[in-house]
Length: 108
Image 1 (cartoon, rainbow, N blue to C red):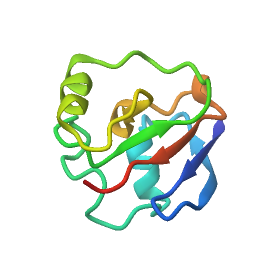
Image 2: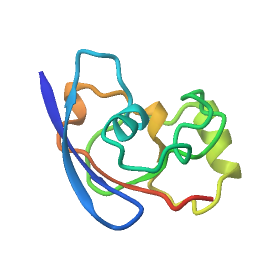
Image 3: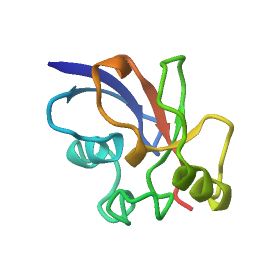
């Protein structure tokens, strides 16, 4: 089953993309798959919460899993962090996040 995610890229354009819930993907991988950020500017650490290149801002009230310790630690050191910041690599594509809207944070 696919869900719909709304992703605003760093140029300010919003893309409505379909995301499969049966492939164990995360939001960072989805952004890469749809090429919504230039190659080499997102997911630099490979999704290990070791960089903040996939930081995004959650724009709507979709229930997401709590931030883990690694994510909290990385966001405490990242640039352009807001209260609604999350690391895309830590948001799994699941049926529960259907309709999620995010904006990619600026490159640090």
